[in-house]
Every structure is written in structure tokens, then in C-alpha cells.
Image 1: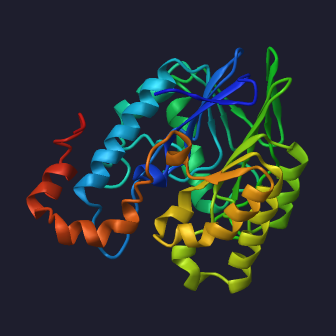
Image 2 (image 1 turned 180 degrees about the vertical axis):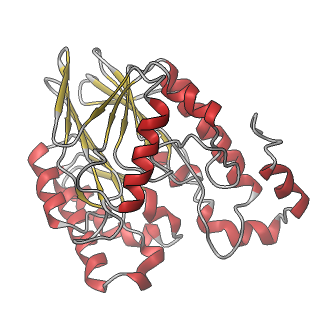
Length: 325
């Protein structure tokens, strides 16, 4: 799969696992002449409609897991924005939701420099526990695990700049905090903004605009959960996306937003503003010339059209398909 150049090609990117590929995640390969890294190297499935994921979702999960492992093998560093399972691979065995095991985790993290969210501050209890177990279980075979919050790391002519912890969604979110990552070379800038949901938090918008990215990957708002949000939060997210569309040449909006089939309607006014400014708004799949495949949003339809036998799920949970499909 061909990487997408930014500007004059000093930075090249490739989305690996996003909702537009049929899984939850924002795993991204970034390459410069100085360093190759995989951001948020995981993918997962999630509960929806009181239905198990469809077989097609597992095919997508298996495929993205293998891509992440393959590209990570040659990477110099891995980065982790926060400790949700669609953003980092845990060390326990779970084939129903995460496609994880101790063996896969060791394969991913062995001999890698890992730049990860701090577990001692700006973190909620569930992520603190997960982050603690992550460090405990991977320190023995990772090359090094370093705290990334508010820090910059230089590799030749490339700088990795991690933001301060910012809310996972709106102000005061109980889901905790995440880190944005800016990859900067002399003439190009890429920004990865996971799970800021729009952004709903105005401080996140200010931080993004200050970086002046040429391209960014944005975790869009979860409009499928609109009943859980203040209506103002979704309006703020759309307003802030519109502002970004005026300033970012290539704005990739994906992740939570594509858990709803209504995402094109939500993005239409944002895309119109971008077009007038000579910019583009698109999904991760569209960035690499593919049609979006929001399988989770289509789960009901998939089960009605292509029923999956209970025995198949029993085999799945026993790990019979761990080598993939």
C-alpha cells in the first residue's frame, strides 16, 4: 500500500486502522527520512445494537491487526495517546473484541522505543490501571518506554511534539485525557488528534491551530451517542471542524464519527467550507482512494443479510481463528 505524501513529501503517512476500514481505531504509519513510527498501534471492535460484531468485522479486525504488526516490525518507535484498547494492544487474550494475546503484544512491542501517555497524572482510574499493567508487562521486552506528555523528541530533522493532556471529548469528560502528536520537518507538518471528538474542547482547537498542520487526522464526534451529549457539544464540534477546514489543507475526519451512517450529512457543511478555501475534508479510506466501510454502523443490516451461527462465535472465543481469516 502506497504512503500518502504531505507537501513536498518530507512526511509520508498511511492510515492502518479506522472506522472507515471497518474497525475502531486511529492507527497510523508515519515516515520521514529520519524516522518511521506507528501511532496508536491497535484496533478493536465494540458493542452495538446488542449484537455481536459480524463476521465481516472480524475479517477487517484481523486484517488491520496484521497490517499494524507488519508495519511496526520495521518502525523505530510506537506512540500511545491513551489507554483505550482501540489505541493500544493489551497483553491479555481476547478474540471477541480486541484480537489480542500475550504473544501478539510481545511481537508488537519487542525492542521498540515506546512514547506513551503518562499514567501518574491527568488520567482516569481505568486508564491508570491499564497503563500500569502495560508498563509492567512490556518493560522486559520493549527497548524503552518513555513518558510523552508535553515533551518533544528530535530524530535528525524530524521533531515529534506531544501536546499537554487534553480532554477525551468535551470539557470535564469522565473518559479522561489524550495526547495529540505533531510530526514536523523543515517544510511539512502532520498532526494526529485522537478522540478529541471534533474537537468539542475549544482549547484543543487553539492548540491545533497553533501547530499549523498541512494534514491532520481527527477523531470526529460520536454523533451515534447524541443522546448522551449536551446538544451544544455536537454544535461546538461542528463549528470547530469548520474552523479547521478553513486552515488545514487535508483534514481527515474519522473514528467515532463513522459509527453513524449519517456522517456524510454531518460533514457536508464542513466539506463545503473546505472546498471554498481550497482544502479537502475526507475519511481515512478516501485518503487512500477507497470507499468507506463503516461496518459497525451496518451491523444490524449485516446480521439480517448474512446471519452468523452461534457455533462460529464459540470457535472464535476459543481462539480457533487466531491466525486470521
